[in-house]
Length: 177
Image 1 (cartoon, rainbow, N blue to C red):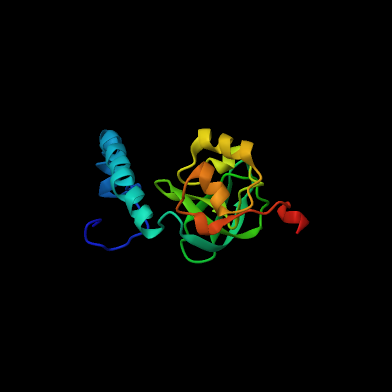
Image 2: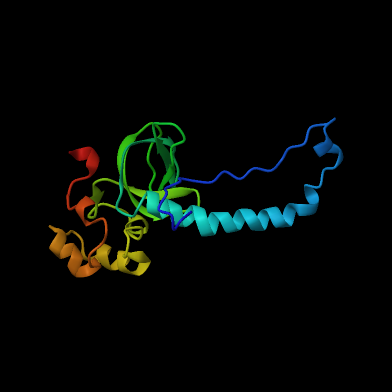
């Protein structure tokens, strides 16, 4: 399927739930094959779901109007629609906040995104590390050289990233604008 060029957001894998009085219930072998099922599910997640999500939502894709559902050290939200993808944002974002995000990483069933614009001068170091190509060590170097006035200054420390068009070099906190 991956080589065919078709795009599928995810494969749902289900186990049979046998009901009393059915043949499946009386001949239930679910526990016997539990290990095989777990291996199969893990294989599908790693070999199909993860690479397919990278095709459907490439790094740098902007997801408009993500509604935050859960606030935490990593906050989670989704776009409106049927069966929307889950986006984790490595920042505390209040519930019901509506924001645009850019895809920076892929999980087996979800994405990691950063708010657009990416406020390079204001993000915590741990969040800067999620900018593709930056990582933890370079995030510390970036933080030490802030503030940046423009993309060229940022690239001198970080190098180019697939999310360069989403970077912002503001000096004011977003709430102060």
